[in-house]
Image (cartoon, rainbow, N blue to C red; front, side, top):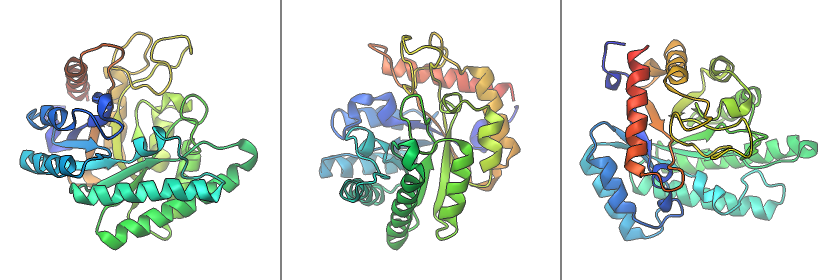
Length: 303
């Protein structure tokens, strides 16, 4: 592709993944957000909960000053606490829902334009019951967000039997779910992630084309899935070209081409395509990010 990628998309970074020390809402949040804010490769950033109100205010000011668009990842609110938004125990479901609603409040505080979350674990025997609970929770979140402004709610599609073992899950079920939510709320969509596609035992085409009308957000990354004994096995988002990993510039090119084919880049004004890359062990965070930028540059040039 000869045209600049910035003409088509906002390149983003998932801050709490590249700087995992901030994933629980504490740590060097402002210092690490600044590292992203001063890098003009990025037009967007995705942050998660920030426990301290003053730090949250300063982060919002820094992001606004940078000119980046910001979205809020609610996934850590569930993953670091073990909460499940489709828990069959109503008290537990309400606890998870309250946390995500608090995240929606924070998202509005920092000026975010989108809010993402994931479905929880499930048992095959009660899968349909879990689906109904997820649908109930999601509609409550959509209503809550709509009452406060124009924040879009996005469900990220995860693996169902490798690591997160989320209800959604296979693309066929994601399609059904999106249709069920959108029947009542127009502020909803799906988030797809290149690193999750092989974990769902699907091809890029199988994961993208069936839900083309519902995709509102895209992540890029890699995964190791061949053997549980391997480093970074599962949904760990190692850097591109990590030993035994499945995604490189070739797969990223195919993914971007699929997004282009379905009109993702025309559907929105420069939609998000965000890196989800996590340092493994003592790898340098900034070098891992630089690795991702080089791979994206190569993939884009090969379109």
